[in-house]
Length: 228
Ligand code: ADP
Ligand code: ADP
Image (cartoon, rainbow, N blue to C red; front, side, top):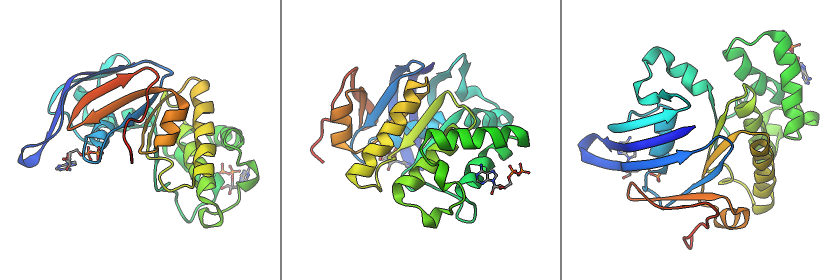
């Protein structure tokens, strides 16, 4: 469902971030993206979200080459992908319920649909009893669960998680991994960029390692492979 074909990305001043990437990710896969700082992981994610343009190659998502998506259709493309960040990025003046509902309001979902879906997804991430709380009343793990709820509320086929456990203690990080695993088991493809060695080593999922802009490993049941 996602395929990079000979994809390269060179930033201004000849900074090569990715070169000749060939990768295929099937629907429903759970993929860890690992590699040292500056390897090109964020660039990989930005190309998927169309936040940056590839310099060469094709990126197929389902049937479409997204490097050819018109500006008009970029918002539509972004909505088909859920995104989770290390720093949660919740709206501080909205409740848990409202943060998640807002993602549906943006896509002009019907208010009846919003009232039905939001409690369902809050239940799925284990936050039914926190619906009326504001972000500053939540723990880090709870905030990340809100951001997961928000990322899946519009039923994307892909969720991209950029260091989702980076700000969490180990127990809380594992809670978040359980939630992500659960979402994956419901059929959503998950691509997670991470430096969490323990998590990658224990989960035994596909690991794609990028170094200096190229894929140096791609193992079906991979390990983190670095000491940090
Ligand atoms: P990672 O996420 O693995 O740390 P990045 O994709 O952020 O790697 O960076 C890959 C390379 O591209 C690095 O050399 C980085 O300095 C460079 N880079 C990233 N973003 C930009 C940008 N907007 N302009 C110029 N160079 C960039
Ligand atoms: P509308 O669809 O017109 O925005 P709703 O009835 O969906 O109105 O919600 C109004 C407000 O009530 C929301 O912004 C939210 O703060 C609160 N709310 C609605 N349903 C719930 C719920 N299940 N749990 C907690 N708060 C809720």
